[in-house]
Image (cartoon, rainbow, N blue to C red; front, side, top):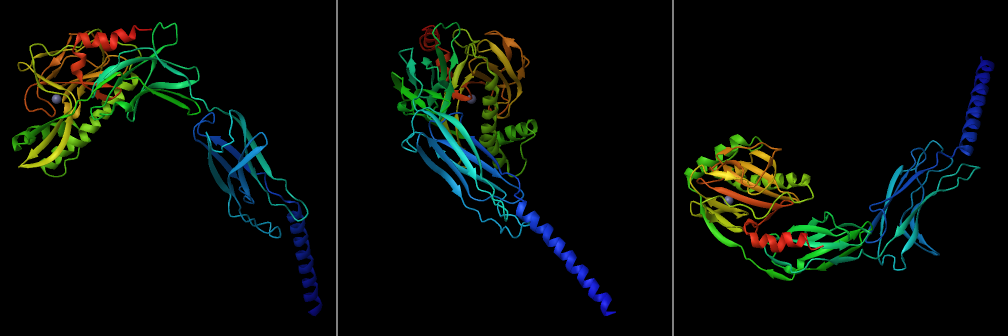
Length: 456
Ligand SMILES: [Zn+2]
């Protein structure tokens, strides 16, 4: 009995010895895979503040010390680094805590201060855990990138830029060859330039709107930007006329809410039916109004780069203007102001169900029910200029068709947010509402738009 049990122990010891030997050989030779490293930038070149990201991954043994640096000539700067504890080499089955790490840093003009135009090297490196008798060489990846610190050149070719708050205009410009984007900035909104047809000189033009609530002319500039984010900006407005918004009060009788709320709701499947009639009205007047403006902005994305309009825009024949642009309306219910919105178009009234002409030539891009606008026809006049004829009782055109100025597109009515029969005429440049009154004036168009597009 004793003899048999001692032979079992011997076998067990031998087995454990072999196991230990295999483990020893494994532990001394096993290094794990080389970490994967990738460097990426948020711009193709370094100029203005550029984000540099290094992505490290090693799924088996984990990552050790990591470093991301920038090198130019004999100077270098560590942008980000991280030390990670590695497991003991005596326990090769264990792996480090970090299997995937993202290091981020930023570089750009003056940061570091020795940064010069030309080439730089971005270097991302990771140390590796060795075995008992083998040391593992670290892994490193480098990327060469160009540093550009000078913005593109930018000249203004047109003159006499007389504009007014809420109005619009055209400017002719010549951005340098390195520009990837140029145009007009009005406050926080950018209107991108387009190549001028038949220009021999590489001139570009930008049709722009000045938001109704932008009263500071110094916030209207031409700009040009390169792929490194270097940006030139310069003023070009020669005369700016401030136009403070007018104030108006709109009473909300129960009968009006009963007329408009269920009608708009039935045509707008996304609209909630929760709450009182007044709450539902405010949701339409505020939320749906914003939604409808976004829809119009979206329609302008496909606009062709050349003007489809010709000459002045058309007012509803034999009509009287009932409301102006940028009227800030306070809505009063039961003696209390319940909402405030800005009227961003012109209202015209004629006889009931009057024929509505296409305000100018262009392509119909929408002919359907459009929330607060009721039955509406949206015409794309080119260069991002879109008109909206709203509150129609009937629509006489289909989306996609080309219309000539004066062609009947529908009849006036009181659909959407309208008290009585009238035409709401709205104009948008790249989704920014602009005062249509300027575009109804042939002399204004000639001086501010047409002559500038010929100025090359
Ligand atoms: Zn209106």
